[in-house]
Picture 1 (tube, rainbow over the protein chains, first blue to last red):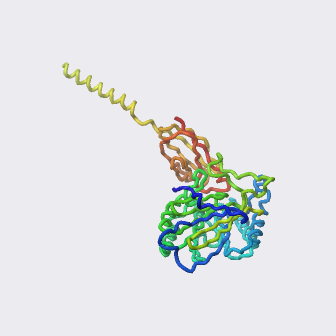
Picture 2: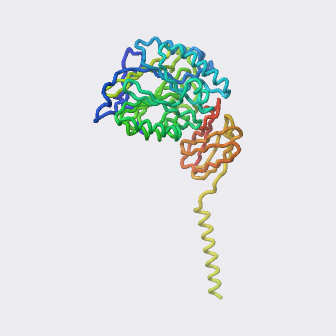
Picture 3: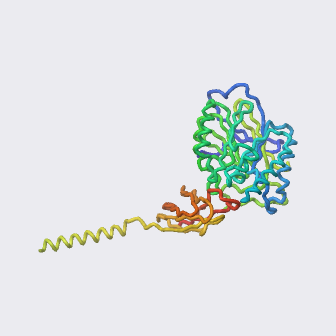
Length: 297
Length: 120
């Protein structure tokens, strides 16, 4: 596992509603991938946990997601697409209640003006039935798509309750990567971190090292994920990993507390630590500028 | 006759030396700790181990599939309901370490963890 982000990669720009983070700077000699790539941007939302109840943690549990959606709809520039990186719903042991929560989430996000939305499961949605209920509402749990010269890969590391990608999906990933040029622009979406960020809090993917080994030969890879309810920026070799904030409650920094428990709601700073991000993809060089927006901005 | 006595005495001395050596240099005996998992608790959820003393943690689950993971020692095991699974390792450092269920087991899974104290 390699180290943290270099300071020179971290840019703070005023007046944009948040921190802008430049990522995907790894391409050196050998060009910047296929020509005719366009700049575009997308929005990442994560960890909405629809169905969660806990007034001490979020007294506006049913209002936070709609608020974020309204804010995304009001962005100055409409995103090309929106991605939800998992934990759309809060887990329940009742399969019927799980479906009610998934349906409730789906109904709320219908308010998004942009219908081009990619959904991914989190372990709260999918681990108790291996993604069965989630797939009834949102389809495949892993898939690829291409957009304006970038190849996007959505990896499912949650439907297996052991937090694994699994042999079958890894073979699928390898077959997909075999069709990509070494300098292809590739973005991976996952729920859990692919690297062992803090396994003591289950912030890892058990076979994530196998996925990273498959990705490593490709020069322009960036990973966006959720799960940990806070921003985290990390490099494994030349691969940048960026976790997103939650839309329900923040979690403490890795290992900073004895237990992984939600950060309590602060009435003086409502929605503190909750947010979403806009990612602007540009080239050359292949780069992803991340702007973080707090809920209520 | 003297030669025979010397032979017996020599053999006895050798046996004694071997016994003393075994006592002095043999690995400490493996300690067995039983842990039962059920949704959403380990019992006990505080374990005390001794550095350098091998341990066999005997794991059982009374309801669903669970996991027992101690990331700081890079050891883990599935816990299959109805089976006894033995997780063997020798702690090589002291301190307090988290163990947790690493197989998503239900609505209380995220809080299913305990503390392993390793003493000198």
